Image (cartoon, rainbow, N blue to C red):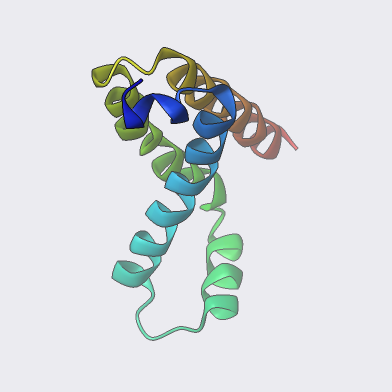
Length: 98
């Protein structure tokens, strides 16, 4: 068994699907915070109504994890990333509607 194949499970995919958008958000925050603290930045984003837009951009970064898992033939892990991405989509739609 190749070393990477031990991560070929849905749990690893779900973990990647949660961690990659968090990292993407931190990078997004570092480029756009303009000297604001984290709480002030969140408040400003909420006031502007951009929460779902930022969430969508961050979740879009899951495509990188999905394609990497597919490239290394880790189909169970890519299924986990796809599942959590669909769950994120429902969250974004729910926030957008309500």
